[in-house]
Amino acid sequence: MILILVLSSIAVFYAIRLSGGDATAAALPASTTAEQREAFRERLGLTAPIYVQYFEYAGRILSGDLGNSLTNNADIGDMLIRHGKNSLILGAAAFVLVFAIGIPLGIWASVRRNRAADQGIMTFSVVGMAIPNFWLALLAIWLFASTFHLLPSAGCCELRHLILPAVVLAFEGIALTVRMTRSAMLENLGQDWVRTTRAAGLGEIRVIGKHAFRNALIPIISLAGLRIGQIVGYALVVETIFGWPGLGQVLVNAVLRRDYPVAQFFSLVLVALVVIGNWLADLGYVAANPRLRRA
Image 1 (cartoon, rainbow, N blue to C red):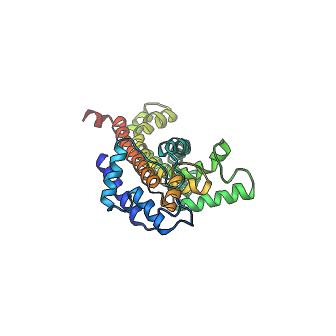
Image 2: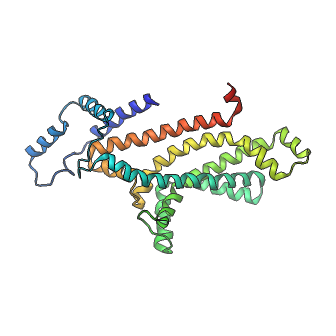
Image 3: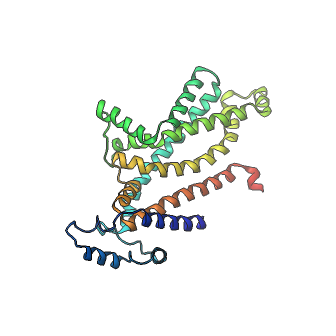
């Protein structure tokens, strides 16, 4: 994890520095002279070689100095607390929707295999994986906000503002969870021990819910960590389109304005969330599989 974070910090730092643009454009007024802009860059250390800038930046981060925004001089730590809370609300809502909807639909599809319900659910999952995230967001705004006026197209931080971005953010995850759950359930329902439990007189609900589903949980738990990474990645698009003031929207705006300190730090925050999500998935996989715990 540490190695990934270090390599990611180097990649992000160099990518932002080499992507072009002028860091003084958003920080200084248009009337600023070339000499004043050059003095501003020198004061920020932007005239030094990139590797020197990186080590200076890494040293400040490790010492707890997150820095300030170039555009409005806002403290990055305060921005993390304020916008991180909004992203946490949106991400948690989407994460809950992924499994609260995806798992029951996957179980139902496996139980009704090759019937109308199964075919309808699988069609939904294919559509969910095929629709681009940004297009689904625009479609949701057009349908529910502009046409039927049921929900707002943007804003924060009431429940009515949360519904559309949370559903859009969770949509592909729901589709993937449906397919994973259905596949895992069908694999377990075809085992000999399931037929034995049925022959022993156990009810179908108990066989499916207590025995088959418990064994099917292992790949689903592994999928959960990947869903965290997916939610973090798609949050950049969803937060920007719906005007949700989270980390993703801050990062996109920072990149467009060449606000180096903000873009670098929040990029690393998102990378760290993905890495931690995969680590939690590994821990959950071991917790759900007794054979791995014994090993």
